[in-house]
Image (tube, rainbow, N blue to C red; front, top):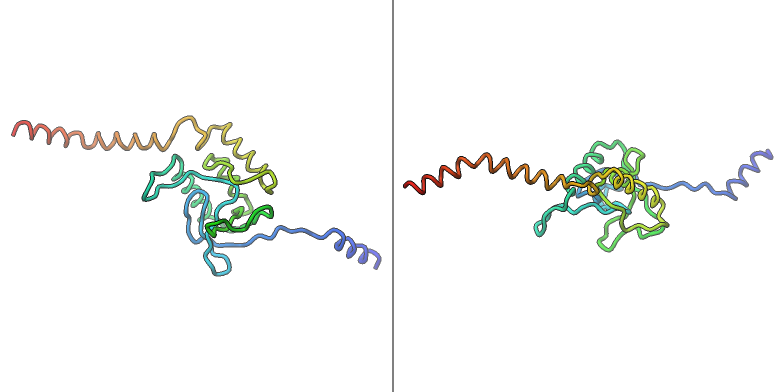
Amino acid sequence: MKKVIVFVLLLLIFPVVTEAKDKVKLSKCVDGDTARFILNDKEIKVRFLGINAPEIASSTKEAEPYADKAKDYVCNKLKKAEKIELEYEPNTDKQDKYDRYLAYIFVDGKLLEEEILKKGYAEVKYANKDFKYYETMIKAEEKAKKNKVGIYSEKDEDEEAFFSSLFKHIKKNVKKVFSNIFEEIFN
């Protein structure tokens, strides 16, 4: 009986703290640091806490380097996930001025922000040293910088892909262009 009383007293003195996480289902990928999820039968937009990925193309601007790769990576991870959970940072607001939820994303038990940072598809941003996973994210970002991957690489793979595509297009159409030029000259 004494053991039970001691155990109950210990529970009262040292309450068990568990991090509450919301289980969600993917609704739609948005970009490298934002997605829509279903939480309690309601769709919510979530901004991944502590990171900033390159911006994807919009009607007013072109995509930033690695934006599409970041989005593809995130979408692939989220679509293949068996379990997605959101964890909120106690040292900041739960929502931003755009009514997006601000949360850490856990995919099958792993912090997605850390994985994105390791690949070099985002940078640590909008986070401070008081945030729970700040050090984890900083270490992941440093690893990407050291390995020169993604946005920290020495060459811009998106630019390389663009020029490769352009040269293929030129090569494919050069005969047609010269044919049209000669036709105009000699007719």
